[in-house]
Amino acid sequence: MAKHQWFDELKKEITQGVVLMDEPLSKYTKTKLGGAADLLVIPETIEEMEYTVTYADRNNVPILLLGNGSNMVVRDGGVRGIVLHMAKLNAIRIAGTSVHAEAGAHIIDVSKKAAEAALTGLEFACGIPGSVGGAMAMNAGAYGGEIKDIIVQATVMDQTGKIFVLSKEELDLGYRHSIITDKGYYVLSADFELASGDKEAIDAKVADLTYQRESKQPLEYPSAGSVFKRPPGYFAGKLIQDSGLQGKGFGGAEVSTKHAGFIVNKDNATATDYIKTIEMVKREVKDRFDVELEMEVKIVGEE
Ligand code: FAD
Image (tube, rainbow, N blue to C red; front, side, top):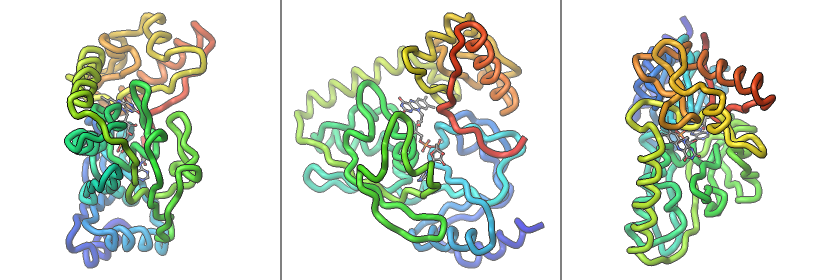
């Protein structure tokens, strides 16, 4: 099969990073479910990333960019082609009030480092379990803050391996949207501009947001966070709660009893269980309130 050939050829060039065949993606996603990737490539350098992208382009191999897997549901049949995971490209550098972070860095770690340097502006991200690349792609946000508020520019690679910089305006950031996913660019790094702040006030804000998150979200179970976007004029969680769906689901997946916007993998759920639960929620909310819930979570891979 083609994947054996891709594996052998990529292994010859990716010598510092990792190339794995038939690697279960359940190990890399926050829902802890789903099938395997034909190939999982974890480059150690930008050159290895570039090699992988140009190899895929030359050989017509599809690429899926996997960040920290916190907003992604992989179907049980897994993903054909290459899953590119940037976990090893994770440097974070702070100079004055400017922060440069590589795409594989966890946005929680960037938020932590900013707080340590008494920089304010990234407190909102202290509990968002995504990578910098994923947070950029999704314009992640919480508690009144979002990536759009602090981003200066992002360095991206296109499907041919070309690297260029996109300004804040060019990134076209909106509610859980950016040009990154529209165009299929790969984020390599992001530059943020924060402000000098009072360390005690920053720590207090982080503690407050952490308390709010821990008390309201079912963090004890694997999940993909809020499954649906906020429909104009409503809250998805409230609609789901008012539809009486909490605790309901299929197999090991259920609508969280703690936060109705979350679907949790409560007991060895399959992706099929999880997706059937999503579909049930969409159907019930449409029937009851005539509101179409739009997905925030990305469903990828094959049945
Ligand atoms: P993934 O889930 O790996 O991928 C998501 C999308 O981004 C995919 O389309 C993927 O291809 C793309 N992507 C990832 N990396 C890159 C890259 N380098 N270049 C290009 N595209 C890329 N989100 C919020 O906004 N606010 C919250 O408060 C919040 N709370 C959460 C709480 C929990 C418990 C969980 C599980 C999730 C939560 N999320 C929240 C969702 C999620 O953490 C964010 O959407 C996050 O930004 C996704 O980042 P990721 O690296 O995990 O991306």
